[in-house]
Length: 184
Image (cartoon, rainbow, N blue to C red; front, side):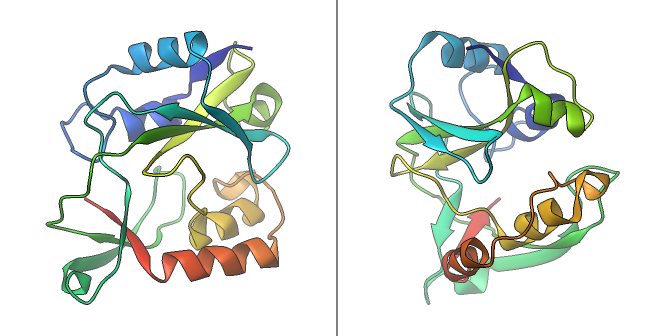
């Protein structure tokens, strides 16, 4: 099995502008090499058959991507309408500013198979392409953000994957993201 970095993931995970929410202390090429040579701690099913998650120990200073919302930090929540790419519609997002999350214990790359990426307009030579990565304390998945689930249901024309909305998974996502947020 071979893994390749997609341009979409490279821009988000290794943006080159020094932002602290990116993967730290390793280049994109080194990260891909590690995924192709070291067996994961676990392989988890993704939200669709074309998706899987590989759990790897974090050997970098990359910090957790998600922080619980508490009475002490809720005043640091911010929000804005943003698009991940110029082709996508902006959606409402929220994040913390001014927090120092702990260093993540695990990096969990999100992989799509070659066929799905081709449907979404991304050609790769490898079997699997990296589309994102979670930075976590536990060796598991963070629920997909509700708006991403909705975007996926809209189809590839709107930047999604074309997977229909699963109401139960959406309810779990809302429950999680009602008490957690990303940070910048």
